[in-house]
Image (tube, rainbow, N blue to C red):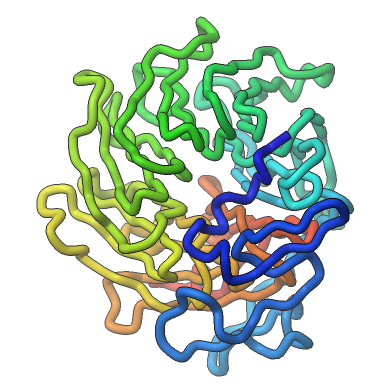
Length: 385
């Protein structure tokens, strides 16, 4: 069983709200299933307020924003979405990591989805005995993926082999919340981050951990390889730091006190090897230039609850997307005086998974605790930025 499987809702807010599930009564800093979020969110900055509950989940957006193309939606009853990632090989194919009971108890399911004329359909699904919190595609085999789960293990799956995981790696002592496959040439490595405060690097060809990295002082929520520098990755943690690591030195290169709150996500710019972005419980996104980390190079404000995931665009150097517990996905261009490009709200619960297609410059996928997975083309990505 995952140790409540939703630690990423932030330890900072655990005393403020409660979740009510049969046999559970947990102080976890989040509204319970099928409940609404307070219009005075904990940790929110400014006076931003959520739209009326009746408008949520109906594509609500602020005045003046452009309508977007039709949304392709798949509802998966009993499965709450945690992560989504497009295939780097097959256009339109999407993997989604999900959990029963909001990740608190029960099993998890990896869904492989394809797009067709009628919308989204399930190509393959795999069940695991604990909630699945993240997923990453192989960079050298179009059929292979790795997920991570609440029982401390990673699972390697083959979509051409529907009988079960090919391999299971279990060396983490607690829940594994993040997993990523190296994107640089010359190496095929996987990095994982866990609640046990360690980062591990794995070699799927030998099926074991190569190295364990220690230094974080709290839960690790996000681990991401540099798309530029072999053997280099970043991690974000509840200890309020962003750290950059180097396989060659088996240690931390840079420690950045990036927020005064838990950091739930980080990503590397695809066009600048020195630029990373962090998203945190303080509702802000901050950009960091590794050549001078004393101050962020940009700060983006607008979310009203913790930012769960952030992704740089693979097509635009200064464009990124973020999703949040405020139900929204927001698109930004940090090079503009008014950086917020578009706000999309088509979910009715926390939005946890987000990815931008490597095949299409306009296509985005997200998933939510409202049991839906969506693929869509926001209007802001369809026009020059």
